[in-house]
Length: 124
Image (cartoon, rainbow, N blue to C red; front, top):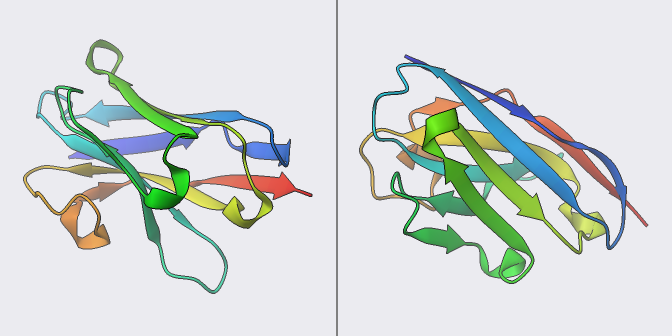
């Protein structure tokens, strides 16, 4: 079992930046691929970014390319999401997720473990 805890969310003005962290505990010896998703009220949970266990492969939703950066530090069992130039429409709960053996990086069903989420609110 793996537990994931997100942190770093909060209030930010449009155009500002936030850095989210996802700390993993439990069976962290497994080579998990990691992803970030977000969900706004009344909308489906959508893919934001993903990173392979090695950190050599990254994937981004078209809407965040050039502004968001996903990274990981396996020695610290932590995944990060640096978010720059934030927009009000990106207000959502952001979730960290771990995949034990799927290549479906862009889909919720591709992940086995989820954090509780952290609220990101971008004001105009």
